[in-house]
Structures are given as structure tokens and as C-alpha cells.
Length: 597
Image 1 (cartoon, rainbow, N blue to C red):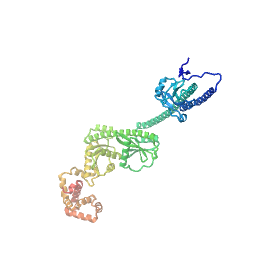
Image 2: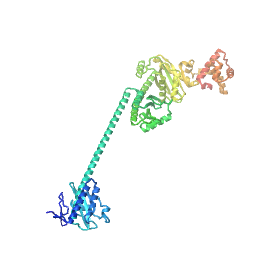
Image 3: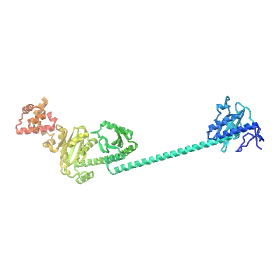
Image 4: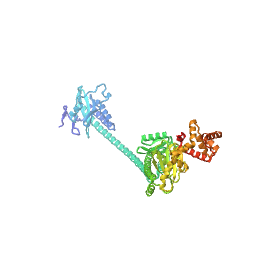
């Protein structure tokens, strides 16, 4: 026998529960009330069809609650759905459904539902009255409760209709949840497909990028391995980027170019501007743009060795070109650093060899050491010494002298002695070429170059060095004191320079020029200089006057005063010779003799 609920026979559920609604007994002919019940069941059937047409859960619950007032005095109070074992209020009746009624408050709803243990049953409201929780069940179990209220317990037919309402509502909710999960699955599947396609695109792009980078590595790697230098690097960068390329040292001197580009301005860039660009690139740690160029630095241990510049006035270079530029800068760094290391080693070996040559080295060992650094000591050589005012023989000065000699095509060994640069040069150097080249490197004309005598053998090198120093000293004491002097040019000065501090020379000078020197000091005149120029120009009045920038009559007056003050006749052969030698001594000795000291 079935059980009872509130004194009524209960209707068994599919899952074994009870609804608390009894089934009306069948009759042979439907009465008017039964026809009304059938109409309501028909309406309920149509409502079920409407619920199952794909509506979302919110609309299904609202339709169910809108249907409740059709069943006598019953009214909906809300739908509670089971969310992970806890019942939550998911829908409340609309104002149209409640009308002027105020929603009833259901205290302790969670606890009341828990007391039902999954079955249908009565619930209580703070305002009192009859309340019932009708379970929304489906094949998946209890989905929730439809809570209804009435002033009094409704009749059995009303309860049956409420029970009948919960069945399609639960089925529709189950279907809606299934469709929701199906849509979510489809969304996730579509998202997974999109993510897979995006991942494939990224993978394809990565493979393309890696392949491009491999090409960059291969091309620049071959350049480095092939010892093609800056020219090969510039050509490779142009091939990889399609842009014109310029490689410069840190001072802005062009080392190599590749590709068509705009005409370059003559001369070096402004040093301050160049340094500012290099500092900006150092801070950025990446290629920087400047005046239509993308500039990357070749740096070694924090020092800039040079730069590679892409000529890009349209700013079309992107990440790919920047990668080529950065890798090329690494290749250039290796090239320049290796070359610098070799140069430093060669310079040290050269300095040690020159030091030994100046002091008398073993001939066999010196030849072997010279061969090792690529210099042929066999054949004629000259020793050249270089000194500059206010400049110590530091690395900057030595490098400037080395670059100047290299620029002239001189094959030489370079070393320092005190504050002087010493070169052992193969072949005869140009008289003024080295002085002019060092002047250009240092930006100063205040220096002197002395060239020694030719060296037929290695044993002549120390003597050539002494004579080069003698020539340098003569130049430093001459007027002008800046320029180049060779040992062959010294003539009488070879003897005078060797003993320029001896007492005999001073006595001789005072004997022949003393009165003139004293007169010049007392009256501020230039009689000794005028006499010196007169002898230097072979006694030619016109040439001497032009050299002194005076009129011929002024020169005649000065020569007459020279004869009067000095007491010497210029037409006497012996007097003329001694006066000429004295003026040469004065010219070499300089200001100390002019003061009579």
C-alpha cells in the first residue's frame, strides 16, 4: 500500500520518492470539474512543449512560476536549484505574477531543504500559511525545488497539477543544462581549434624566423671564417637587409661601404656629436636611429671599437634588420678585437726588437724576430725619431705615429724612448711626409722629426739613432723649431751639435758676434738675424730684404751698422767665413747666445 502525506495517498516517483500528491480516482464519465482539470493538464502539456523548445533555465523557471497562480490560491515563492549540494535561490516570481502580494520570507531555507532529505515536503514561512517544496527531478537526480504557498492546504487536484508541473520543468532544466554544457564544450572545442591554429601559426613563424636567423649565422659566419674583414661584413649585411651599409671606426672614419646610398659628406663627423650618438647607443644596448640611419655598435669590454650603420631614411628596417645588424656587430667586434690584439702583440714585439736594435742586438736572433712579426730587416734602413711639444709618448701618441707611418706606406718598427717615438724604417723616408702625417693625426704642428743616417747593416742602427737624435735636437733649437731635419742636412751642424755646449764654441761665438749680440740686447735691434739671413741668401740683397721684409735701403743701413758695431769687414774672406760660421752657431744655439750668456 502506498504511504500518505498530510492524510493523502502519495504518488510514487520514478526514482522511488513520493510527491505527497494523491492520484484522483478514475470515473466513468468526466464531470465538469474533471473537464476543467483536463483543460489544465492540456495547458500544462502545451507549457511543457514550450519549455522544451530550447529556452534557457531562467525562462523555464519563470514560465513554471507564472503557471502556479492558475492552480487555485497557490502562488510561487521561488525556485531553488542544487549547486554542488547546496540549494541556492535562482529565480523569484515576477511582479506581474505576485500582483499586490508581498513575497513571503522563508527563514532557514537551506536547513529546511536539508530536513527534507531529497523528498518533497512542507516548508514554513515567517508570515505563516501553507508552504510546499515540490522537487524538480529528472534522470540525473534532484535538480532543486519549486516552492509554493497558499493560505490553506490546496485540494488534491491542485497538488497533482503542481506535481505535474515539476516534471516538464525538471526535464526542461535538464535539457537546458545539457545544451549549455554542449555549447560550452563546443565553445571550448572551437577555442582549442583556434588556439591550435594560432600555435601552428606561431610555430610556423618561429620556424621561419629560426631559418632566417640560421641564414644570417651562416652568411656572417662564412665572412668571419673567410677573413674578409670589414668589406666582407658590409657586403654580407647589404645582402641580408637590402639596405646600404657603412662601417666606421669609433671616430667616424669609414672602414667599408656596401650597396647604393646617398652621397656622403666630406670629412669626419663632428666629434662631439659622434660621441653623443655612441653614448646613446651604449645606453640603449640596442641599435638606435639617428639622422636616417640605424646604428649598431661593435663594443668590447665596454669600449666602442666601431659601428655598423644601415642607411634607412624611410625607417623601413624592422626586427629582422635589427637582428642582422646586431649579429653583424658581434662579427665586427670579433674582427676588430682580434686585429687589435694582434696589433698590440706585434707592437710589443716591435718595441722589444727596436730596444735591442738600438743597443746592439744579436744579428741572427734579430733577423728571426723581425721575420716573425713580418718585417724584413735586410736592406737599407733609417732610424727616425719623433717628438711633439706638450705630448708624452703615451699609447695615443705612439698610435698616431704608427698610423701616420702606415698611411705613408712606410714599413717600420716602432718603439718609445723617453718622450720620443723611435721608428726603424725600411728604405729612405720622405723629408717632410712623416711630419705632415703626424701633424694631421694630432692636429698640432708643434713637433719635430729627426732622420738619422742610412744603415747598411744592423750594426749601423745605433749610430743612425744617435744621429737622428742629433738632427732632432738641431731642429728643436733652430728657427723655426718645428719640422723635419735629416742628418745629411746638418753639414757643419754635425760637429756643432755634438759639441754645442763646449767652452770653445762659446768663446768663438762671443769673439765674432759678441758686440752685435750686446748691441741687439741693448737697443732691441736684429743685426745678428739680418747678418744670418744675408749669409743664408748668399749675399743677395733683394732675396735678403724680402726674407727680412724690409726695404733694400734698410738692409744696406743694417749691414753698415754691422760693420761699425762688430768691427768686421764683410768683404774680407776670413772675416766673412768666421762670421758666417758664427751666425750658424748662433742659429743652432738659439736664445741663450742672443743674450750673451
